[in-house]
Structures are given as C-alpha cells and as structure tokens.
Amino acid sequence: MLPLKITAVATFLAIGFAYFYSPVPDAAAVEDQWIIRKLYAFNQASKLVARIGVMLGFDSAINITRSFRSMNAKHIAKDTFDITTEDFEFDGVPVAVHRKTAWLKATNGKDAAGSLRPAIVYIHGGGWIYSFREIFAMMERYFVQQLDVVVVSVEYRLAPEHPHPQPFLDCVTAVKYLHRHAAEFGVDPAQISIAGDSAGGQLSAAVTIKLRDDGEPFLQRQILISPATQFATFRLDSFQENDRYGILSKRAVIQFWLLYMNESAQYANELNANEHVSERVAHHKAWPYLQKYQTFPQDHVKVDEKVSKVLEAKILDPYLCPMMADSLSGLPPALILVSEFDTIRDDALAYADRLRAEGADVTLQRTNGFHGIYLFAGQGAVSGGEMVESVVTYMREAYSARSSTR
Image (cartoon, rainbow, N blue to C red; front, top):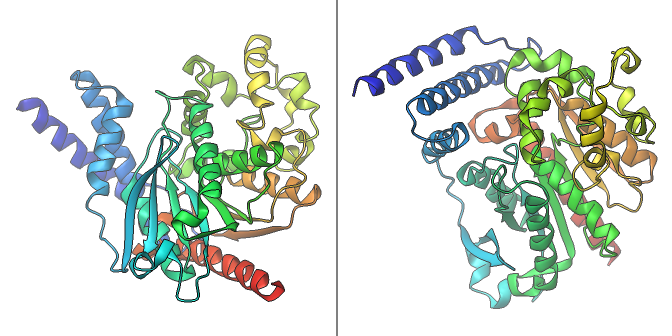
C-alpha cells in the first residue's frame, strides 16, 4: 500500500510542477498554450508512473505507459454523430470501419441512387508503439460526418514486439484488401485515399510508394499530418528549435525510430549527434532537400563508421525512410499539414519540397501548433481545429473536382 501512496503523491506533484512550469511558444494561441501545459504534465506523469512501475517490477516501461494512457483515453467524451463503428479483419489485419448508420440500411452501403462513396484509410500515430483507438476515433468519425465518406482505421501491429516491416506490411495489406473488396463496404474503388499522422504519416507515405512500386497506384490522395519521413539526420533546425517544448522531444523521436527499426538503444547518442550519416547517405539525391532545413554543417561531424554502416541500408529503405526513396515521382496529390513548434516540422517540409520537385501536386499548410494538436480539435485547440478543417476542405475540393469531370 505504501508504494502506491508514494506513486500517487509523486504523480500529483509531477503533474502540478509540469503544468505550471512547462515552456510554451508565445506565438501559439492562448487556448493551445493551455493544452500544451496539460499534455506536457500528462506526459511527465506517464513517465513517472512508468519508472516507478518498472522499479516495483510491474511490467516494462512501454506496457505500463500503454496501460496508463489507454486508461485515460477511455474517459474522452464521445461524439453524438449517428455513425456506426464495426470491427473487421482485412486478410488478418484488424480494422475499424466507420460509416453513417443510415448507410447500413441500404444494400452494400449505397445511397438511394445506388452510388458508392469515397473512403479514407486512416493510419494512426503513436511512435509505432502506441495505439489509442478512442482518441483517433474522434477525428475519424468527424471526417465521416463532414465528408460523407467511409473511414477505415488500421490497427497495425506495434513495435517493439513487431518492428518494421510488420506494421508497414499490415497497412499495405489493409489498403489492398479494401480496394479489392470496396463494393462490400459501399466504397468506390477509384476514390480511396490514405491519411496518417506522425508515425502514421510515415506509414501512409511508405504505403503510397509501395503501391506505386507494385503497379497499383490507385490512391486518390495522400494526407500526411505532421509526418515523420526520415531518420537520416537529426540536426534539422526544427529539432534544435522545438526540443525545449517537450511535447515530442528529439530524444523521444530517436527512441521511437530505434524501437521501430529494431535497433539498439545504444545508438541513440550517435543519432543525436548525427554521427550515423554515411557517405552514401550524404550523397543521396534527397540530401539537399534536408540540408535546406539544417543550419548546422554536417561536415563538422565525425561519423561513427560502425553505426553508419549498420544503419545505412535502413536509411535507404523507402518503406522505412520515405524521404530517401530513389524516386518520389508518380505519386498521388498530397496534403501535408505542419505545426511550427513540432520537432519533426522540417521532416514534413523537406518531404513536401521533394514531392513537388518530382511532379506531385502538393498542398502545404502550416499552423502555429505543436505535435499532436490535431487530436485536440474537439477540445478547443485553435491550430488543431485549423488542421482538421484543412483536411475537410481539401477532400471536399478533391471530391467536387472528380464529380465535375465525370
């Protein structure tokens, strides 16, 4: 009983301290600043609970954090939309399919005129190691309500238990299954788009490249929300400028990548110092796009030959590191949403630059938010609301343009 009391008191003190003393960007909206404080306090409490849990032998830090965050996610207020969420398996991959209840009363989800609807496959973020269905469902169901689309949420396997390529392959499998069985879910196979945030943005970009490589470029649009697109360099300006806000630290990004690619945590220091950049990586055609956002000169870094050799092939794997693909041509139009105070802001900007340079139609939107702010759109987040509404506006225009040409 005493350890539990100590844990409770320590957690309360951590929350209070973090809430009032967390740094916030002055340029962010006041509403967003308070959300930053609350989220930072929650993250600090989560870390403390995990540390104490590990010391007491309860479980691993990752599993304790998963349980702690999932417990809190279940208290999120539900929407009042008349939308039905059903669980399916697409060739063994669990998915949640969100559709308006009225559609289910019609044959195959068709409307009165017998037409099929567009669909968005959503791939959630969470550093490839967390999944909080209740949180992402709020945004997914909002898209159903506002866009009259079917939204399919992919519950891919998580690292570190299932590192790359398992999560990526799950997402590819789910998207291809939906395309083959579209009519069964009331979906027009010619109007399937993909969307994802953070780690889910990385997976969405990778799936889009894979479909092109497989000769199946059927995606209508790709929507990348604060995507992680590379781990070739951790010296981009956004890593240096925004690390102090603590919502998604540079160290956390490195840890997530190492867990996802199933590499040793001992390489964290080398990645943090950019000592993992091999000569081949530094001469890749993608490198100049990254260097545009890197003030710190890479030639001042002494490369660790051992680590760079171990990681080189993974950095150059386009399904792991989309930014470093040999080609980004032949990809569908993209909406890329970026938060100014996000550590991986420049990942997204560099990826947008390269996509555009290689022929893709790219719409780039920047807001004065921080990583994950879009998940708080329903709780008064100003920049989060802007990001979510940008998706709605962009897709409405895409659907309208298609209808006018048919």
